[in-house]
Length: 218
Length: 275
Image (cartoon, rainbow over all chains, first blue to last red; front, top):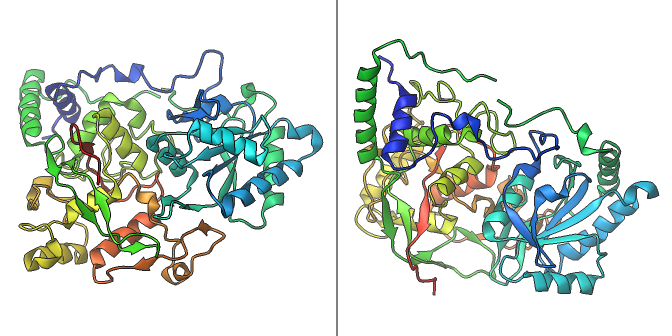
């Protein structure tokens, strides 16, 4: 005999006290598209619900980046080896774009130093490195940083000396938050990153032309 | 797309309801996922570490579920959270093997007994489940600390019976379907199935910085990994720990496998921070 597992599951949920709307759960979901906005593509990073804070101490969700392609890198402010090199590379990748495309790209750096990289520390970092005002510097709690790192495939680990061991990845995101290119390592690959960034900019005239792939559509 | 629903007309509804309720009560009573056991504070000895790292990492006391999450428990979760059903899950959060051993979106089927540990779940899905229950995944250090205990002592490696069981499991093929979670023996802390059933996700699985091939890792590629060049094994004899390390370092957060499940953890109320 087949055990009615759906029923069992529903009862188990009720029995365990979770008053979840099991039987009509299909009506609700956690990623409703905003009014007037096309649904995000299935592979969009902007589906993540985690939130960050900017160096101006404002809350920030990754989905706020939607609309312009992004050059994204994770870092930590006290990094002495890879991160300064990465900053130079981010600048160089953008400079390789045709001039008319450069302003349509956002550069985003997200810290994995949950402890030390407070908004104030990131402000100081922006100042000391002379980063332009349109660069987005973000920090988050462990949960958010781990999720973003997992989405990007970035591995990181705090070493006892206070430095982080971490993958060096520069990620190009489409205007809808899909990973379209990743440049691994610290040497080479700038032309390829710039080329994919340029096509991401050209492919993004407006969010209305987002990929037809949809999520959460019954 | 329309969801397939089981036909309501097969056996009589009242019978199903009574049977379902009875099973649900039993399932709830037996459900280890709900029960948690305190793991006392201790020191975790990483099997690999940078030369600048201390030999042990202090771990604060915490709560750990006594059993891995079962298929029935995960079914209740996806029933309540449709975005985690097999047909709906975003490819961002789970690969195409997600819950593949289930008969359907909301049907377990013969390959997924209700009380067997759920497998074919991604790290994202495991975290979402934990969050939905007000819990979290254990950290690598927490999991390893809990799993280091033997049946009777805090150091399982020194218990012949414990190591015999551990290596018997490691050398046996994964049974299909997986056995009931309650078939495993409790360790010192009252946790079951940390060994002997499935591998388990930990929250920071991706701190295992192995690039893929051990000889290559001996001299880490500075271009790929900043600061990781000095890792060295501390206890090459702990073969099981190396297997876990290798597995974790090979995983991506959206991947699922036939032998990888999870259990949840939580902070102790008023948990003292580690020394």
